[in-house]
Image 1 (spheres, rainbow, N blue to C red):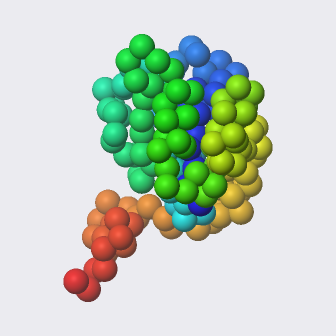
Image 2 (spheres, rainbow, N blue to C red):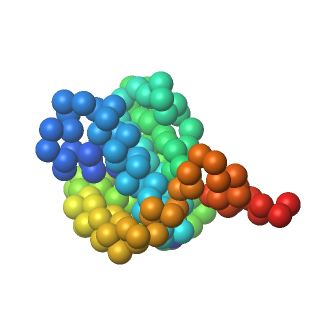
Length: 156
């Protein structure tokens, strides 16, 4: 099931996130990427504001697609647009605690997961796979490990 994450909404639940937005964004991306990898889920994260130089519009971070609010708009509108343009909105879960956004995407057929519940789910999955997480990213000299990490068969 694909997820669309309201990035600033989830970041907003972390105390002090506004003091260092680029760092908070990176930390969220790391956690969401780990969640996506461990769950085998497709995730798109939408942030408010102008695109970050490190993570431009349409880029990906370890498989997580990164989008931003359109100029003169906000992330909520972009998320609604994604749900409305989907061929199967009932297969999408939107992660937000924004009440108005929740109502709109639910009316469009999407499922909604509150940000706090999603953060707990990410933490739970990370905790249960902590030992395998150390093995997930190979060290610099492990060519075969890196090939597997990026989905290639080392024997090819």
